[in-house]
Image (cartoon, rainbow, N blue to C red; front, top):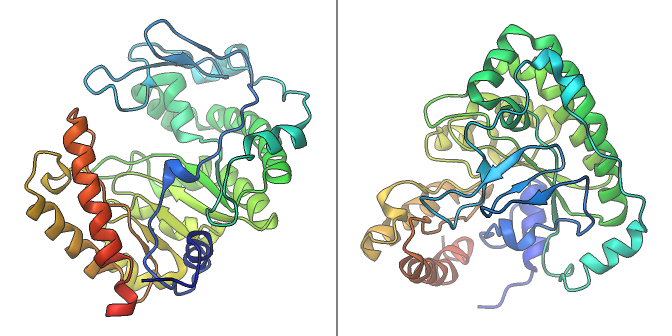
Length: 334
């Protein structure tokens, strides 16, 4: 069937708390733009990883090369958070023609039909990448003042970049990615998050909202404890909204104030490339039937990366067909 709204118009309706014409499909990698301008002295490593602009080494996931590189195990950049001023250095913002850089980077991007998304700096994850989870979590408990000072320093750099990106690239969605939870519980309490992380995420949100962007939070795991603070900051969407959270209860409490972008069991059997298609499609139907009513939902169902590339691609093709035939027109048929 033919739809009236473009993908961009429809998704922005979702992020504005309005009823979309059809169930949106979230395309994280298809909508994300990263500037081609290089920041700092990062470089690629011989093993297929890289060192980022802050000096953190990333290594490929050997068990599954399809996954993005992760902070290299055992490579600790910052042993004692109190020493951060001696070790952590943010690079200078490149002095380039940003208008020309944005023009080049966006030359082939369909801004009429696709929302443009850019990513913000993270705080919790960045600390863990500097210190490892043991060191980073202990630092947040034992020396919160030094952690706050470090985040203040990182925030100054992040906001300089954000202002440039907002001015020249003019994204539709500002994307905050900061995974701070396990499958069972958050790594930190809401109180600690409010004290050490929220002040800096709030600044990110204020800049983006004042520029006319919608703000989307990426947070994996059972992180529903933080939702009240997200909404207070002006965040209007959350992905991947994993099934460990009480998604039905969250939808009932917040309605369309917070778009649930996900709700798909990306680790369960239904997402496995080797699972029967019937199992996958039954789970997909259950997901949309449960979360689509009343709006405030976007589709993300996909096969997991378990090394079976051919099987995953075949399963994803099945899910795309199911999206077009059943999920997308759901509001027309229910």
